[in-house]
Amino acid sequence: MIKAWLTACCVAATAGLVLAACSSAGSSGGNSSPDAVGATSCTIYDAGQDARITVTSGGQAECAELAKSLSSGGSFWTAQPVSTSDPLSMVCVMEDDGNVAEVIDGGGQYIGQEVCSGFESSGWTEDTQAEDQIRQQEQQAANAQASASAAAAQARATQQQDSQDQQNAQDDLSTLESDASLSSGSTLSGDLSSFSGDLSDAAADLATTKSDASQSNSYCSASDDAEGDAEDVEGDAEDVAGDVEDLQADIGTVRTDMANLKGDLSTLSSDGLPTLPGATAAIRNARANIASAISSANGYISTVNSDVSQAYSIANGISTGSCASVAQATPAAVPDM
Image (cartoon, rainbow, N blue to C red; front, side, top):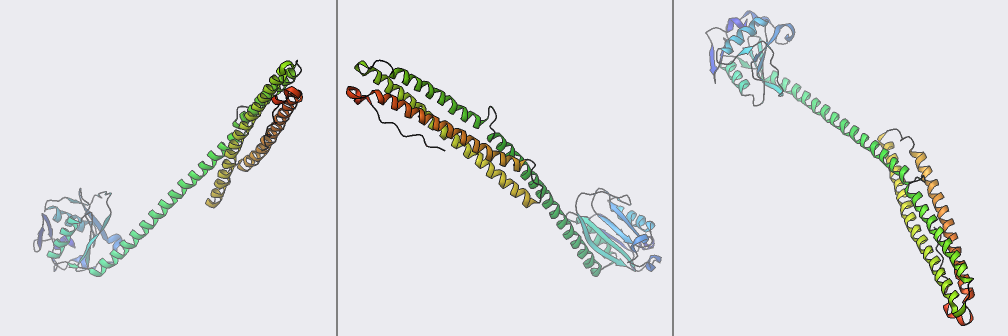
């Protein structure tokens, strides 16, 4: 038994650690196979440190005696497990008369190295074959851990990206539904309201043109007034042309929103995620609203072009003879969208 080898016949001191062992004592623990680690192994720990020793021998009594011997050098070794957050690895494997001690440590392994030196000074032999095997196992474990960590990191990154892609799609859906809406207070509805307001102004100016043209044209006063009124109608048509530009810009925004949402749906598909509820309907509704807005705008354009044509026709109709110089060419019509 280790207790038998820890006699005064062999004492080694290394940096304050004392390991007593006798390599030639011929203990009863020598009949325990180094491979029979299960019930014949025990572990002692350097309190407050990462170092530990697993001994394959005859039981806890041997570890207790070894802990007592090591503790005589200033450290406190105990069978009570010591937790550590540092990675641990084998420092050495020492063998003596069938007894095997594996020294394990973390960090710089300073304490473990000292313990290994103590064993060697006490006559124990380093088992390099066992060390190679353990190093291979540790490397395999480290590789497996690194692979698992990389896989976990990739899974987290994928999950975060999927979540971001879903959020982007939801945000773009909300933006499209807002920009493409024709409900009161929406951007497109406001654009069409501007058309309506300008058409009301054009209708009023056309009515004034008709009224002024019906007055006496003495000294071409009626012609002057009617031609001025016709220019006002033309100004209303220019306002409508501005409305067209605003509507075109806002429709362009809606089309961009549609393209963004389509891109989001493609990304979700590539991610293997379900499609976004309501997205297809929103795109279909946006197309319908664009078509409706363009149709309404072209109706307004047709009306204001007619008002301009009538206004100039009326004004030029009385600007003849001595008043012919007052007449003006009818301006170009506002083109349809």
